[in-house]
Image 1 (cartoon, rainbow, N blue to C red):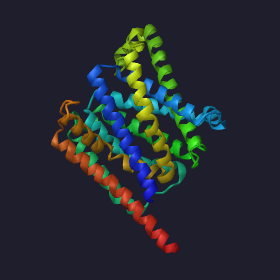
Image 2 (cartoon, rainbow, N blue to C red; image 1 turned 135 degrees about the horizontal axis):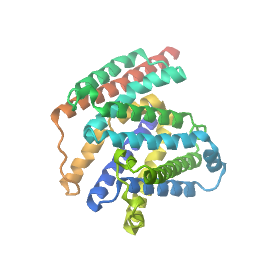
Image 3 (spheres, helix red, strand yellow; image 1 turned 30 degrees about the vertical axis):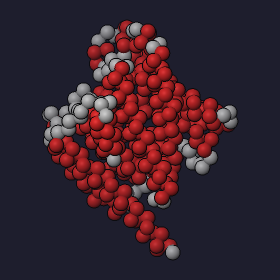
Image 4 (tube, helix red, strand yellow; image 1 turned 180 degrees about the vertical axis):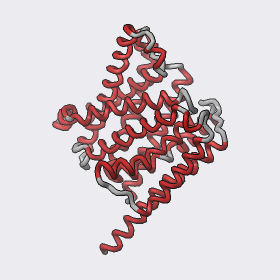
Length: 327
């Protein structure tokens, strides 16, 4: 991994940490609906990037490419499964369970793309699995906790969307305008799929009243349109979407192109700790309430994160050995 690709990768991770922490601050401070707040972020961030990139064939190409819409759909499925898991476990536990995307990606990319895991990364995967087993024993119900399957489904979707981003023809380029167009269209596609899903759920609930009880999130803006027209909500959500979510997505797509799916997901394991750092700073200045974590959760999550970093180190060591052998 070169210094330039590492810079892009760290920028993407730090950007997502900012998106999550700033969004949490605003949601707690103003009581906005989380799904509507996120929808507006994606919508405005996507439109802004498309406008910045300007007219060109990349926008039309991205809109016509079916993988763009598969990506948008899987992003919403990921969010829905993750949210459903939060009914059964804490946010911290969910964040650490998300590290399972690293071994899941190794298996999926081996089976689908014939990208066999390297021998040097196997100890890291073993460490992640070991941390996972310890973490699961702390959950209510252990392996019978529904969050296990929900998070597994969520992370399978995460791996799929990351691989789509890596292999998308419009992302395999150094052209900034083309990548900005793709980023904007992907955000817009995700927002439209999210909106269509919400409207479809609301329509279905009118015919099946019991359906609303099965949904783990509340969507009050569907029954009270005034909530969706709050100008203060739109201003703040648009600001986050344009200033943070759009750029973070742009850097993520570039990082995935530069370091590939496996390395990107392994690095993503550090995201919970980046968020903890930013949240502690926000708490120190009075912008967030204190966050208390159970020490076993943090310890087992740290084991999984160290395993993820070990995967990165093993792949980096193998790449250096290959370059030395060619020299």
